[in-house]
Amino acid sequence: MDRLGALHEEKGVKESIQIEWRGAPKSLPVITMPLALLYYNPDTHRIRAQRDFNQAGNEAITRDPWGNEAQQYLNYLLAAAPNDPSKGDPAFEKLRDDLETYGQKDAGIITPSGILINGNSRCAALREGNATQMRVAVLPSDWSWDDLSAVELELQMRKDYRRDYSFVNTLLALDEAISAVGTETAMKSFRMQKQTFNRSVWILQTLRDLVDRSAQADRSLNLRDFENDQGKLEELYRTYSSTAKNDPAAAELLRESRLLGLLLDKSKTDLRLVTDRFLIDHLSKNLDGSAFAGEAAAVTTAIPGLGRGLPSEPQPLLKAKELVDQVAKIKTSMLAPDPGVQAQAQSDYAALNKLVESALDAAGKSARLKKNQQAAIDKINDAADTLEAAVLEVGDAKSKHALDESALDEAVINLRRSLSIFAGSVSRLASLPKGSADWLTALRAIKDD
Image (cartoon, rainbow, N blue to C red; front, side, top):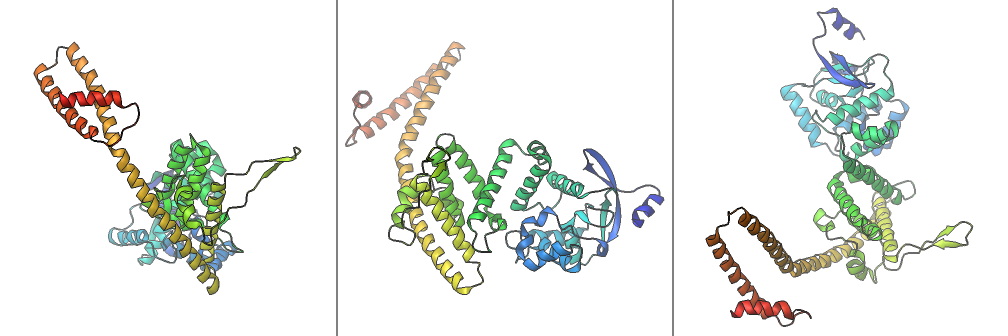
């Protein structure tokens, strides 16, 4: 590249950046390039989940990634919202305005032929702001596509520039890194703890499963449809993992039930009401008499050579899976080009959504009742724990000759007064469980003293 050669003829390289290159640090010289000579990277992880938003544009990238049609489509995607590429991205607009006001702070990175590795979004933002130049560092001439992917991921994981990957594109980048360098190296490169790493892998597998289950003819949901669901999916993973430790079957039912709510765009607050008992205790009642009623068909897995099969999954789990399949396909049909198919899908979606809303109302009332019933018991248990801790504290203070006996006497009088009030309240209960006579007698003794 002539500009790079000219730079070295000057009094040394005035600016450089350091990257990780093939396992070792490397400094790259920074030059100024006309924006017209730079190319967007068609394999950038930033828009990986959005590439198939427009079929013609995606085909242009595949056919001729450096052609005008493909580059214009990449420019469009870089400025679009990750969850809905038909709209502009506020984060991109903020980047554009910042560059217009304050100028470029960090240099991008390009190949010697002008392919952008780091700085695709900044290039698009500079172009939209009518800039003509961009500062970029230049990779060595012996670069490969594997090098480009590694450099882009390494820089993204530093989290030192203005616009992070979207939720889904981060998952895809992690998955690609696992395939390329293995689990341990990918985890280290992404600076992830094992729990966070496992959660990301689990979420991507779950989303791919939903996409597969949504398939209708030549159409299905897309991973980008779940860009706004990061918090819901992360909470689902935590609840699922916790439940699976003691009851794997309940965890699977919980997972399917919450995926149903996720596909119906329920809030995090609503999804917290969906336990492994949600379908059994609330939703199944609403399904009776509806188009979604009926038992799911049992599937028995045959064991080769034994003439018998593994037992089918429990009916509630089969039903939950069937409902998830149905609503996933309904959402796909809502995107169909046929207006009649769209209308029927919207009607089915509204009908199932109404049934789930009613079940959530019932689950909410049940949860509030349970909370009220448990609140008093929790307070009593807390008081017992506090009193046990006080016994230890009193013993410790006494052994150190640090016990204020006057203050202790006053505190015990307050405790006795509180116990007396509590005794009176409990004594007025209409019925008490069997075996409560001993402690009830002791409480009444405090009250009657």
